[in-house]
View: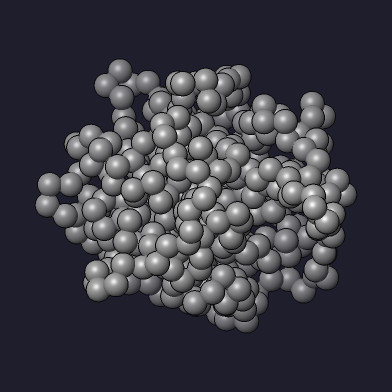
Length: 385
């Protein structure tokens, strides 16, 4: 079975120009997880050099795995990958301040009746403002109808974060996800979302603007960083209090059917708590009560990437799974073409992304199909068998 058979068309719409660069940018370069690459490891290697990575259409173990334990005594701290030494620098962003005091809206999430299995589980990669592409992908998978309303019954849907920036209609994406959350709940399913680093960036640009924050790369601001990373002024102009309230309360991580759902492929989550609840509470408390520098630091940590790539990648995944449970990590954040080293084709054609990317000894699934770089906006049903 080819990738195209598993993830058939239609051809996704092209709703606007792609904004470069496609990785988050620091004052002086891109922000990666590791500091130095291991010997003999780099983009010039084949996919077999990326921890046994492969695309979805290849073999994937069934959902009978048990949660894994960390490898004792491996001395793992932060994995290495092929990056420039300048990657130590912090990204140029400003801290997100406390959310506006809005009454929290709670949607009911009905539980299955006795003996009734929960609905199918779907995950959706980074959208980055590409609303037309999102609608097309959701309709293709039967999650919405032709009018854009929930049509998936008791299905469970998780967005992995990064709704805004680079694309033409980030607020439109947020409005659609909020709408689907209400409609899914009424149908007995649910539609939920994680907080990505661009949610932190967008909220910070709104709250703190050009207020300076201190980083290891020097003075920066959320507004400058947001603009540098594809922020769209029309999104900021349309941001309303109910958007801020909803975005500020998104969880940082979740566990569904043994899948540990994260936005960023980083181990930085471990710095915020030893359980999923503790991490989510810590991030929410920080956004509600802490100042700009603390918020900046949170953005800096969740902008790290590539922790699961390379020889030490599986150990990083094991560390997260040991702390938070599950047997696989599913993440967005790092576009698949960057993970595979297939960013630029010799003929100048857009990168080919046949589907989700399985790597780190089949412990990690990457879901950012690189829609901002002419790739794909990925939707996948879990587990991937």
